[in-house]
Each structure stands twice: as C-alpha cells, then as structure tokens.
View (tube, rainbow, N blue to C red):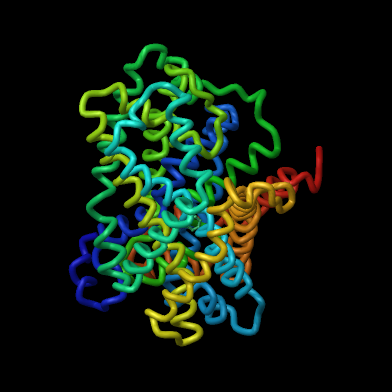
Length: 458
Ligand code: TRP
C-alpha cells in the first residue's frame, strides 16, 4: 500500500492505489451473493452446518484460487482468454477463458434480474405497502412484482443500461470510483439492521439456526452447493479475478490483498445472515423460502424499527450499488476479451455484451411469469442459470485454473509473481498456497463435483 501513489500515475487502466485494489476487488466480490444468495442458500440447507462447510471451502479452495487468478492476470496483463494463450502458447488452456465468457453471460442472465428486484424495491420502499411484519403481506408484494412480465423485463433492462454506462466510462474511474465509498456504509447499515434483528423477541432461535451446527442435514448435494457458493461469492473460477489481476500494479501484495478480500467478504455475508435469520424466526417466516427469502423477510425488520422507511430505502439503494460493482466485473470479463483479443472498440464491445446479456436475461426475467412452465433439465431458466453456473461451470473452471497454475505454470513462476519478483519475502505462505493448489484443491473440487452431481456415489 505504501507504494500506492507511484502507481497512481503509472497507467490509466490500472487500479491506482493499494486501497483502490482492495476496494475494487471487494467491489466484485461483495454483491447479491452476500445479501441475497448466502442467506437463501444457508436457509435452504439447514443453517450453521452449511455455513461451516462454506467457510472450509472458502479457505481451502476460494482463497488459493483467488491468489492464482490474480497472479496469472497480473503476469498475463490481458483478458482471461489471451492470458492463457500468452502463458501457455499452443495449448488448449484458453478453454478456461472461453468457459469464463460463457459463465459471465449465464450469471448475468439471472443476476440482472435479482438486481432488478432490488432496484424495484428501492422505489417500493418509499411507499407503505412493503413495511410489514406479516409474511403474507411482504410475500404478496414480491409475488406481484416477479409474476408481472413487463415489470420484470423493464427493471432488468434498467440494470443493464446502468451497468453498461459505467463500463463505458472506463476501468479506473468507473469501477474504483463507484465501489470505494459505498461498501463501508453498507457494512455499517448491516450492523444496525443486525442489532435490531437480534433484539426482536425469539431472536435466539435464528442465531441458533445460523451458528449451532446440525450435521445430520448435510448431503453431497449440500456440500456442492456450499462449494458453488464459495466460487460465486469470491467471483472466482471464470476469469473475473484474473481480469482484475491484470489491472493490478506490480508492487501490490497479492496474497495479503486476497486474504483481506476473503475476510471482508465473509464478514459481510455473516452480517447479512445476522440481519435476516433472527427476524425470520421471530416473525414466523420460512427459512427455506428460497430465492425470495431476502425480499420477503428484510422488510419485517425495518417495519419494527424507528426510521424504518428511511433505513429500508438506504438498504436497497446500497445493495443495488453492491450489485452494480459485482456486475461490472462480470461484464468486464467479456468486454476485456472483445477489446483485447478481437480488437473491438470499447463502446461497441460494451453494447454488444449488454445486448447479448439482455437476450439470455429476458428468459430468466420471464421465468416466474410467461415462461414459468418452460423447463430446462427440470429447472426454470432462472434456476437453471443459477444452478449450472455455481455448481458446474465455476467449480470446473476453478479446477482447471488450479491445475494450470500448479502443474503447468509451476512453482517458479508462481513464486516470482506472488513475491513481486522477490521484493516480498513470503515464500513460506505462498508455498503452502501452492501446495494446496497442486493437490488439495483439485482433488477436493473433483470429489465434491462428482458426488454432488451424483456421478459417483459412496
Ligand atoms: N461475487 C459476486 C457476488 O457475490 C458475484 C460475481 C461477480 C461473480 N463477479 C463474478 C460470481 C464472477 C462469479 C464469477 O455477488
């Protein structure tokens, strides 16, 4: 961080300071994954035991892969696709980048829809219809939004337009500027909501659910879901962190930065859990309500606190900013590829990407209305995108990334990059990370994938 200022003037498409790098990376990691997905999956998968498995996956798989992506990205200084062409010419490892581009489209397809709900809730929060502790009331507000095809589409397009506009403004200004200031405010707000939630009657039940593990509910599918969440949460397994790594200055400390990102990200998720679960049990909501959990339960906390309406507007506003930061990193994977590898102009690349995402996305947006009867492998489009990206594409991408880094790129190059060519004496810790990448991550991910998808059974 001490060298940050020098970096600031180095080049316009690098993140300018050490703090900027941390905040921009956090801007990608922190998003709907923390506020919407983490609570809904924890609620549907039995609570604390799921949380523990998720944390183990984050440490043994998430952290090492994040370091690998940052190192590869900074070394390659290009998009996810051509970085592999550069680092391993005449091989097929570019397939990781290609899979990543596909994953970016599929994630954005449902992510923009959830972000659309959040945008809509900013406006709904001004009215009084939402401010209720009655599950029936809050559920019907949500249902009337998602079953309306036109509203679903329009909110999604608004999201796409906002994200596209920010991307066109360029890397440093667009990404760093947007995310830097807002995350700390979101964290403070979550603490305030959390305090209200745990002081509600019977809140203990919610805290017990979140923190007292009952491993009897854990199955191979649950473990795969926890692993998928670890990938999704940290934005790894598809080249988003690799693309961000390509904007890192040569003097930034990759392992330390990644550790801070992982810790801060986990903190935000747990704060979101503390804000939601005590209220779920206090007011008699269903913890396993699925994708609607956040939207139906969080208004009840605001309904029972002073200045509830004000805090609710602020909450959905900040959540939409967090979602924007995350979406920028997804779109950036595709745009960086079109610009660097295909030589497209940045504006054109952004338009093309957003257009493609609108096409995939509209199928997800209509999943609760017009297309609710259309199933892909038994899933609606929304659930299909959500499931296949987290539980298949990202883990497979991560598996390949770990194998590439440890077995193809190798210790010497990994060590040179993560130690900033010897400037930082961190070979002890990076040795551990490398060994995990080489043996633990691939084997663990492979076993969890194969058993979770029921390809092998014990
Ligand atoms: N991590 C983000 C979240 O939790 C989502 C996200 C952004 C993402 N970029 C990604 C997930 C790349 C996977 C890959 O909301």
